Image (cartoon, rainbow, N blue to C red):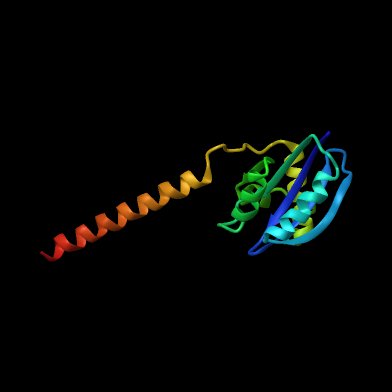
Amino acid sequence: MKSVLSIDVANGKSEVLLITEHGEVLIEPYEVNHCLSEFNLLKNKIDNYKLDDLTIFMESTSTYHLPIQRFFTNNNYNVQVINPILGKNNTRNLRKTKTDIEDCYNLADLFFKNTVKIHTKNMNDIYSSMIELSRQEKHLTESLVRSNFS
């Protein structure tokens, strides 16, 4: 049976929800601080269910998602990170109310609808490329400024 740990990521904490494809909530939404002890407690709760097809599903939120992504990746879980715009466009209610718990359910719905294209490119490679391009841009800008004043 397919199941998902949907994570609404924030700065230093996340709201988590473990739910099956049949809508059975295994772990009610609750807040997890981004620290190793709480990640391990969450992992133990998940492992108690002995799930065979589990995906960790979250939005990319600046760098806030990286600690939790790293933890689950290092513990050999299937982790999928999506663009937050995709999550924003998928809501379960018409009123567009924003709560972390509702966002967890929205992410789970989005995962089970299977309409999200997952990019396999490593985010660390992207960040490294961006840093390199930023340095090149800075160097070129400085060269232009120097040549204009010479």
